[in-house]
Image 1 (cartoon, rainbow, N blue to C red):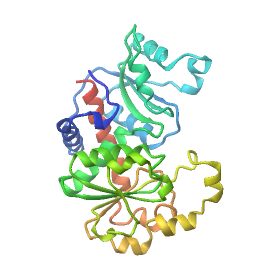
Image 2: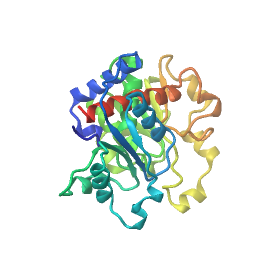
Image 3: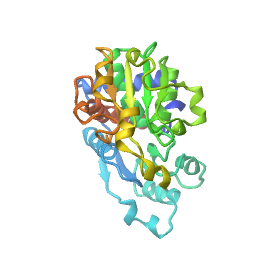
Image 4: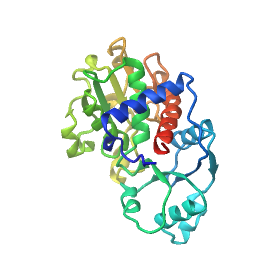
Length: 297
């Protein structure tokens, strides 16, 4: 039994095993059945990640208990640690958690006393999104059969994206060449160790994977929101028709979603032939099945 909190803390062989396991499940291999009870605690709104974990749990024939954090004892001041100890005490084996606090799990792991469920990080603030990262790796590997030598461009609101941070680091470890584009003010300093920040159109036709990120209006400043122009952003940093046509024939377009149509990606291109956005969502169920199996081995 183990946790799944940061994909970059997992050794390369285990990451590759998770990718291959997800694809095997997608191809029809039977999941490992166990008598497991799970709870999904989402302190931030979510459609894809929340429902995908629920579907993954259903596919594994796990039992689920339903708790809304907004109506739980946490609203009375109970800590996350005590909530988890309570859930373990009543028989919960795995807790899938999304929280607005970066690295929420560090304080939980330092707790002593009664046991807690196995933990799966479904996203922590602007820190990590390890299940999204795995499904992205599954999508890329399904397309190219490797990572070594691939050119990947990650574009957009890098500063507030847990997806960008998780993906940039793991893709480097797996041998891809990562570059970044988007507003320079949204480029975290520590991203320099993962790749170069370049103008979007520099080396554009050489990219194998172009990954767009949502502009996170709920995290940027009030002034940035006031000055934001969707039309201008799309022209400078978005996937326009001309940029689409200048991609290589076998390039793929990715986005963790939700997509702001006509901002990050032109409306007509969200489901264009090179887009893998909805394939990512499908792969998310199998990636999360592999993760849930992994934490209960």
